[in-house]
Length: 146
Image 1: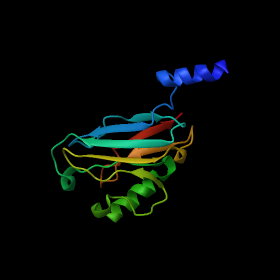
Image 2: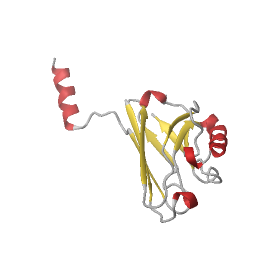
Image 3: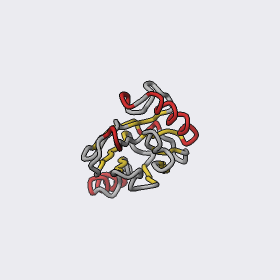
Image 4: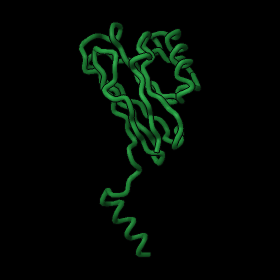
């Protein structure tokens, strides 16, 4: 019984939590994210992705998005996304390789999306990347799930 009270007290104090359940990336008029690696918790029920574009160029000129997939699916998802075009945010509609994706944004804009935490497994190999044409080589990072 004392254990339950201790757990409740710790939980209320914020010392026990699910861990990091959000991905917050910034980008600009350069072809890069502000981070190359992000860690989230496997205990998250929902993971939120927020992308902020601090530049000034419009989406048609220097738009960016964030796409998350298993590491071995990045190349195929990015190639099919480029073929799909800007009208669908450079993400092939219904692509099962895509775990989550924000819309394409330009300077001064932000985009947010959420997905179930159970889509990621602790220790799995995941990447986040931009599918705008020509951006993949520089705009990619590792998503670590603990």
